[in-house]
Length: 280
Length: 264
Image (cartoon, rainbow over all chains, first blue to last red; front, top):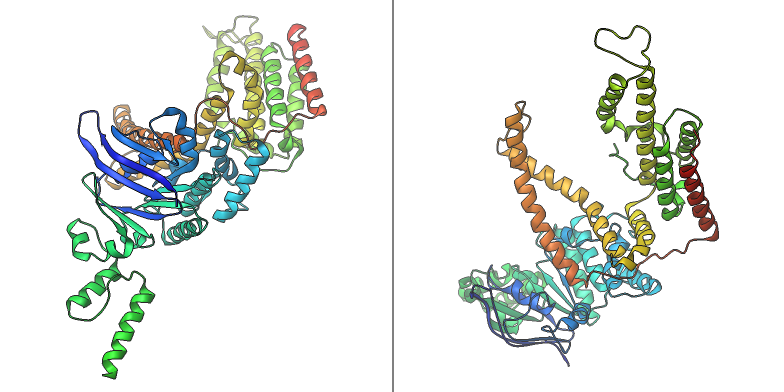
């Protein structure tokens, strides 16, 4: 597998010298599904802004698809490769109709009209927004707006989508749609970087990075990171409720694994344990 | 309830007209209207043209006239100014003491107000029958010749588009700020001017901060989507048909002729 993002000794500080990111070394491969978690102000958002060339490192290098973010001439290529979704969908919408908004990114890249049309239709298809082409984005629901923002990125045919707490302002239905779409995109081979406070959403990823005070303090499979219940709590993060429950049961001496994050699997474990004790 | 000149979707011939043709027609019509100085055949002709456009667009007349409503007070003041301050032959019964109303004042007052009504109606017919996307797209294509002066028609279209696109968002924001203040006991329906000014500045500051924050995020999102000033491509690139070229040429020649040889 090829490295999509390569971060070497990244340091980022404000002009007053306060360091926001320190000694970040990181490799993200094509097609990975990665969650980035950590308490507020730990530098998550600052870090991901480097992956889209919105920020340049103070020291060290960030390579996206082999392009160094330092050089202005690489910016367009990097933005085509790595799309970014922000928390508030309202402020990401530029177009006056749904289709014009989706076309905004590829139009900036200068694709001809026929190619724009193909990309817009394909992106609307993937996000389930077909039939809304002529709608005014203002009239969409919060979830639909976030799907529209994602369609706008997909039309640029990126290899990586970075999402900064995309579900924070959405209702349950909108949240499920966005998470479902992310799963689809991952299945299509698009790499995902998902920034969140919500560790249940982080559990959907394959790999989890934990940040604290501008450093990466853990980088492991989601099962390994999220089952460290006490450690996560000490960081001020709320572990998935199911994991917390399994951990509590384990503390009471029940023989249960804790690295399970779905109600179904956890339920099965508990039932089978229950049946075992009864048959004894 | 529709706001001033807000787009009303429709399937009429006027709705489907190429936006560039509509824009040029409205500009031509406005120039002609501004050229009119006296009541006469031109004023009548332009009024008939506009009425037939409203009829062709199947717009309810009340809807179009409604868009004039906010300007009514202005019209009234303007009319009174013309009425009282135009020297000329006095009307019967005048002068009444120092007050004098002349024939000239009355006719010019009526003609000027009539002209303003026609201008607003012409602009309203355009904006009521053309959606924002088509309007900015049409404007961009009309402005393309200015690109040789290193002024980007693309940037103007983006600016205008963003301004229009954020109107409903900012209206919502305004309501949110006001509701939040009402919920904390602010009194916004005040009578004394000083209190009103204080109340408005209380709304303006949070609104301004919100707008700045929003524009920061918008800039990031636009940059992340590869925006850079200058040339870009478009989802719709309609070529003008021969018929449309003929219409535009006729309009330009006709307007130029009227500008040079005004018909009363």
